[in-house]
Image 1 (cartoon, rainbow, N blue to C red):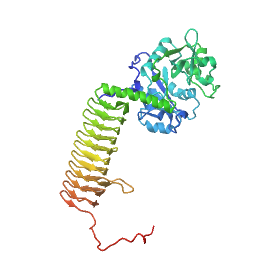
Image 2 (spheres, rainbow, N blue to C red; image 1 turned 60 degrees about the horizontal axis):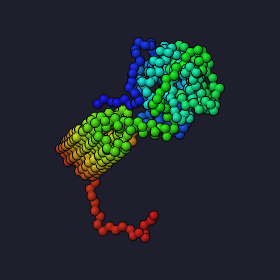
Image 3 (cartoon, rainbow, N blue to C red; image 1 turned 120 degrees about the vertical axis):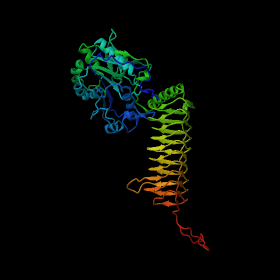
Image 4 (cartoon, one colour; image 1 turned 180 degrees about the vertical axis):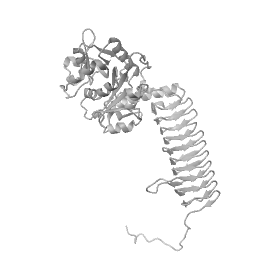
Length: 481
C-alpha cells in the first residue's frame, strides 16, 4: 500500500537541482489568529478532512531537510506545538503578531544562522500549496538573479487580495494591500498569492527599513517589493493559473469549499485505483489514508488519519474511522473505530465502538453495542452484545455474554482482566479487575467476579435468591412522594 501525496494536488513535483544553490530554506507563516474563522483555535489548526491546515504545508515540504524548514507561530503557540510534537518540526515564536514583515524579521536571525542562500516564505493556511510552483519560482529567481520573487494569480474577483503593480517592462514594482488601494489600483486583477522567495545575502539590509505606515499599522512583507526596486534589485513574478491551489483559507465558507474540492479529488483517486465506493458524494477520506484495490466502502462514511485498509475489507454505511488498520474484515453500519487493528475475517458491529489500543484478531466478533478499549480479542473470540471490555485480554474462541463489563478502574488506577481461551462468561457478569478467568472456565450469568477463576472451573458469584411470600406493596394512597 503506497500513500498518495495529496499535499501537492495541482501538479507533479520537480526538484531543484542539487548543485544549483548551497542551501534553500522554507519559512511557514503560522502565527495568525484567523479572526474571520470565528474559532478560538489557531488558524493553522483548522482542519480539512480531519487534518490541520499546517499539516498539509509541512507534508508538501517533507523532502526538505528538517533543519531548513521553520514555522513561525504566535497565537495559540502551545496548541500548535502540541499538535506537531515530532522533533523534526521546528518553530519560531512571534510573541506579538505585528504582520508578515514582522514575522520575517523575527525569523531572520535563524535564517542567517543556517547560512541559507534563498528562503521561500509560504502561508500555513494554504493546504493545497503546489510544491512544483515553489521550486519553479526559486529557480526563476536564481536564473534572473532577482533579489525577490513572488507567485501571482489573476482572479476574476480580486476582492480581499493585495494587487500586483507592474512597471511598463513587466517587472513587479509594488504590491498594494487592498485596504491601501486607491480606485485605480483596486481595478487590477493580478493579485499576490502570498508566496515569496528572497535572496538572503541581498535582502538582509532591507528588513530594517520596513515600516508600519499603513491602514493596518503592521509590517507588511510586501513592502520589500518596493524596497528591492528602490535598491535596483529585480523582483521576479511567476504567474500561477490554478488559483485553487494557492488561495489561503480565511473563513468557514472557504474552509468547507477547499475541503469539498479535496474530498472529491481523493475519492475519485481511490475509485480509479480499484476501490469500490458507493455513494461517493457521501464519503470522506483523509489525505493520509491508504486503501488497497478491492476495498468496499458505502457512504455515508468517514475515514481519517493514517488508516490502512487492505483488499477484501468491507466498510458499510455510517461508519467513522481514524488511524484504524483493517485487514480483510467486515465493519458493519454505525461502527466507530479509532487507533485499533482488526484482523482478517473479523466482524465488527453494527453499532460497535473500538477505542485506541484495541486489537481484534482474525475471525473474532465484536457485535452491536459493544465497546472495546485497550484490549485484545484473540482469534475467534466473541463479544456479541451490549458489553464493555476495557484493559483486557480475551483468549481464543472465548465467548463473552451480553451485558458483561470489565470493571477496570478503581478510582485511582486501571487494572487488567485476562480471560483464557474457550472460556464462557455468562450474561450480565461484572469482572472486577485485576482478575483472571482460566481456560475453558465458565462464569454463571449475573456473577460479580472479584477473585480469579481456575481453568475448567465453574464460577457462580451472586447472592442467593430470596422470595418473600405474602408480601404486598403499600397502597398508592399511603406512599409518599
